[in-house]
Length: 349
Image (tube, rainbow, N blue to C red; front, side, top):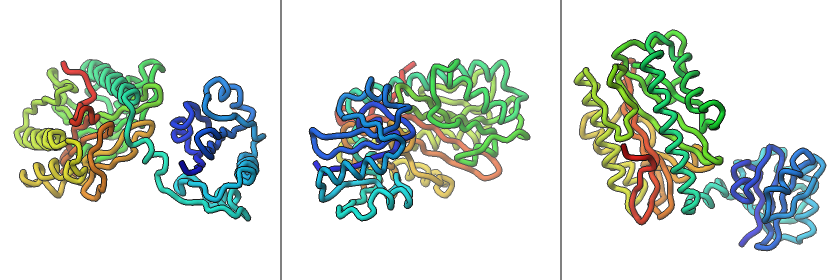
């Protein structure tokens, strides 16, 4: 094992089950590791961390890290260049005769294969996220028509939080009609939800720090539901065609997931279905992304992905079709690779 240093909060948590906004974690070998922080966090760190020595660095973490690195007589230490600012990296490395070896996404690469315990946490996050969608659905039917996107967005956040029980994975996307054609639409106060409108909701919560991510697209009416099986009925035939195409693309991608398959081929399975239907140029993002402690992490399911499907991976499958100035459709679920095949992380109704 090569020595390394991390400072990203989720990277810290993965190393020692604790994090804060001012800390460094250094591991020099299997038996020597340090968690550097300041007095505000020392007590909590000592209560949580079992695999490292906790050091109160008196708000000068870099100085203490340099002392430890010098004392250990290291020749090399790995770091993630995406974590450190130029100024902080310069302060850490100045005049140290050590090879600081950059490895982009160092922690995310370590976390790409989830343990069974992590998959269980992610499944619980997905289930709690599903319940949040159901809470929003009930409110939508009695309250939603006549409200603007900003109001809908606020209510979606409220439903996701469930009176403070949940932390959000990210700020929800709640988009009506033509705004749903923007994959990461911002809520608009002038866009009012009406009966029969198309509504896209993309949201998630955290369960014990692990994220969920889910998208549903519905037509607002009495029978509309954020259905777990993704079955939706639209009065408009063209909307139905687009929705069915997206759903078929998702199913094709999920069915292609097997150990050893290229993730670029999983992306291709979804993309081929949309292209066959004549809407290929309107699928404008990758098919999926890893989910874990971060809402977006490795692996990436895209045409450029170099990774292959491995046991323990967790990622989204979320194809979409986005017709500018008209409407957009996306459906998204989290997938875990368990026993060599895809497991959708949600409960069957």
